[in-house]
Amino acid sequence: MARLARMRVCVLFVAVLGASVGRASAAEFLVSPDGKPSGDGSRARPWDLATALAHPASVRPGDTIWLLGGKYVGGFESRLKGAAAAPITVRQAPGMRATIDGVGEKNTLLTVSGEWTRYWGFEVMSSNPKRQAQTPGSAPPESNRGGVNATGSNLAFINLVVHDGSSGFGFWSSGEGGEIYGCIIYNNGWEAPDRGHGHAVYAQNRIGTKRLVDNVMFNQFCYGIHAYGSSRAFINGFHVEGNVSFNNGAAKSPTSLHPCILVGGGSPSERIEVIENYTYSTGYGAAAMQLGYGAANKDAVVKDNYFVGPTSIRKWEKVALTGNTFIGPGNPVSVDPPVADPRTSNVIISGRPRGVKVAVRPNAYEPGRAHVIVYNWDRRPAVDVDLSKVLKTGAKFKVASAQDFFGEPVLAGKYDGKPVRLPMKEYRAVPPVGKETYVPPATGPEFNVFVVLPGE
Image: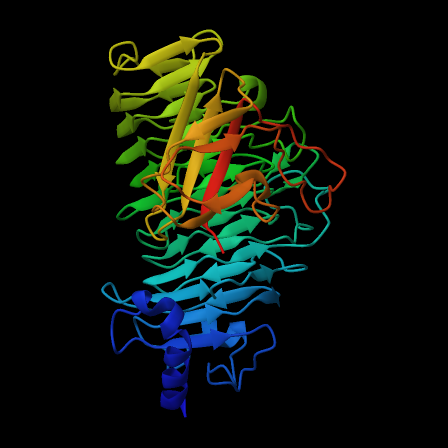
């Protein structure tokens, strides 16, 4: 029966996704919100999510588990184990919206152990309206929003939308390597008497390299990237590239902004790469990056970033600091001790720039998808963007505001090979669950982030 189910599902999806099924031995299974533990992963008898993530015996390295559209309520744990040359993929089915809603769950929306598995394209959130804790600190007993906790090795989280949990991702040193790529992460955290708590990505690493690449992170209750820990933690081997981090902390209040990127803690860090990232905060009040914290550190590369807001680089033996743009009031970058001189091969702008800065980041996993970051210093009503490296002539496409990803598209059409004109309106982030009357600070028309997607 299991073998027959594998054949049925392969036939079901081959017409739509034949290009993604590269090996004859790879099989595909279905999961549904109303699936059953007694199912076999076929269309007629789909699994429930908990069963699929527990690694049924019929699932082998290289297989794909498709999540059909709908809401999967509760906290879930995945123990799937693929292989280096044949990872298992858990992915949202084409044209559908699959949502894990951990309302009422404590500490976890999705816990991922196992290894060599990719989690791709679905939504993880909590509809729990409670956003306040009476106890200060980072672990109040009454907190029950949960997050995505990755404890396994060589895991990949690709193009997920993660919001309104206690945190976006916990990416921990118990697992080696791995990647968070192309995710949209917002409104995570809670309010406490001392401050806002909860970050987009809270990460630690000991062995290998963890990659944080091309994510969009905004409006948490605290930090964006928070690679941090005590003297007993490990903060080594991070590759941070192409991320957009802005207005983190704003979910608590517009004046409670926190650093966009923090790497460093109570133990020495080494093998840190921060390359081609983009930051912004309304009023430029939040730190763009804090590289280094309490301990003395070894080596870091900081290259080709576009940092709006103060940047501090401290307690490093060696820093390669090249090609960056530092923008902010006064002196927007400090290096202590001065192991690298930011004046030699970087651009330093004190105050507000002029002109327009556009960055297009094609998605490495999905053709026709990209992030577009626009710094519209001249406050033009619209900005022309070249998407020729993203779209083929004649392809249908749509563009969403990253701050309202599930809302109506900013525009849609058929690509004619010419620059696409993006309206630079006063787009605002979606309010946090439980704070629906709160109005997040606007970034437009001065700054906006867009997501280019294949059209329908």
